[in-house]
Length: 217
Image 1 (cartoon, rainbow, N blue to C red):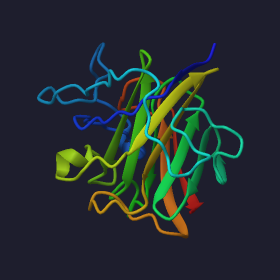
Image 2: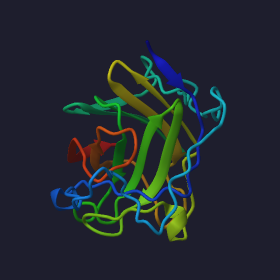
Image 3: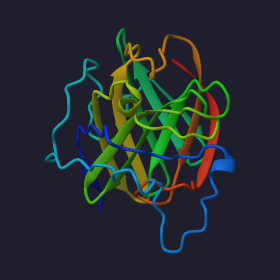
């Protein structure tokens, strides 16, 4: 049975440790613990907004509902079991990411080296709620705290997700140029991306798969 969750969430308190590099993927041995949050930091907040709330998009074919519909995106690219779909107009990027997992999914834009300087969007669905974060990676293997924790802003304008048939799908909207120094300007042309997904519906140190590639906006 398909479960769709059309939610707009802003998670300024998310402290996340997605590891695209192999060196960052090995967590210290900690029996019965998968948390990536240091003990001194609060747990991520989870949105409790009612289902069905989302921002109206300027692109009339796009809606933040967590469902990839025919014609909704002008371009798409697959990286094994991870798929990106996207469209742009004069102001906004509309993007969907889908992976064969019940856990988290993430995409990062224009890293300088491995994960370093990547502008990352990461999200998961748990208990019918979408948690999503706008992040920036400070090193080649992270960490990549939320922009808001580094003096920036949360620039995800609309988002929604769905879980169906072993796949997690998350859609989001942001400005091509947010004006935030922790977001990469996404002009026309080629952009390097990194991607990853994990098996757990919460953020953990270990991923199932990761990779890099290029998309053309």
